[in-house]
Amino acid sequence: MRLVSAYEIRDKYLRKDMLPTIFCPGCGIGSVLQYTLRAIDELKLDPDKIVWVSGIGCSSRVPGFVNFDGLHTTHGRALAFATGIKLANPELKIIAFMGDGDAAAIGGNHFIHAIRRNLDVTVILINNFTYGMTGGQVAPTTPKGLRGTTAPYGQFENPFDIAQLAVAAGANYVARWTVFNYIQGINSIKKALQKEGFSLVEFLSPCPISFGRRNRMKTAPEIIKWYQKITVPIEKAKKMKPEELEGKIIIGEFVDRDRPGLVREYEEYKKRAKKMMGWEV
Ligand SMILES: Cc1ncc(C[n+]2csc(CCOP(=O)(O)OP(=O)(O)O)c2C)c(N)n1
Ligand code: SF4
Image (cartoon, rainbow, N blue to C red; front, side, top):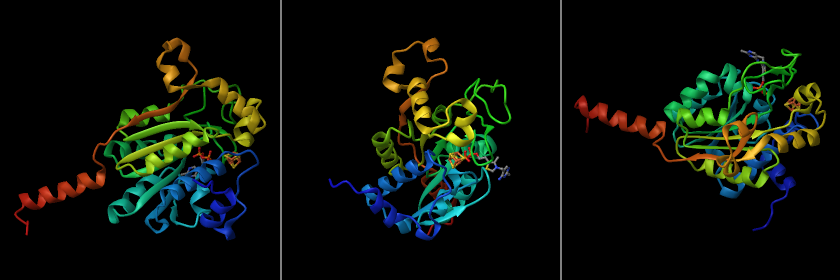
């Protein structure tokens, strides 16, 4: 297969009038955006049948840069808007581009309930362990001991493991990679985009500006080295003891299953209701 260049991806899918992006040097969001566009391109999906939805944050700026229909909504509410779009027009494929704060803090309730309902949506989640846009407050994902503007002496609370949260809440597909696992990342996005129900691909993504600088990792390469220390591939993790996994982040594919999605369940429900009411024609 011919390798499509980054320039071709840019020219085909980005809104030139919106460039350059707002992303700082070394930020991982642009890479994840490229992986998502590559996945769409390789699957030959029709851009007119895809809607990008987001809340607020650096990651949430993404729908504004792509030449697709989209909604840039309020902080934490991307999945509430996604629910409305999908139920109004089930033919559309929904991509929600979210930050870890957007999904797991202010939007945490929407996140777990969209998963519980198995809303038909693909969430691409940028986990940079911080609130990037507002300058580096701690998020529910900030690892214990690391610093943010709201934890100058180090975070003392336990972080959420977003991928495991999604597995427990019932998602059909969940994978987590670092932004440097680009082949695995693109393959996971391709799988996620073809899934009925809720799919999540989480990326550990460098934010050198709001997160790295406060944690002695001023550049993306320093953050990569840290990722190499803290991540463990899932197959290796299965052979490790819980105490060996303390403070580590597992990467890989966590679940791949085919429970019926919300749209299918809702259609069945409407049929049942009509039959019970004697409205069947
Ligand atoms: C209701 C509401 N509360 C707070 C904010 C301020 N705010 C904007 S972005 C943001 C956090 C963004 O963090 P995250 O979702 O992790 O995205 P990132 O910027 O790191 O990509 C906050 C708290 C807001 N815009 N709206
Ligand atoms: S503040 Fe962080 S997350 Fe936001 S654009 Fe800059 S590097 Fe990226």
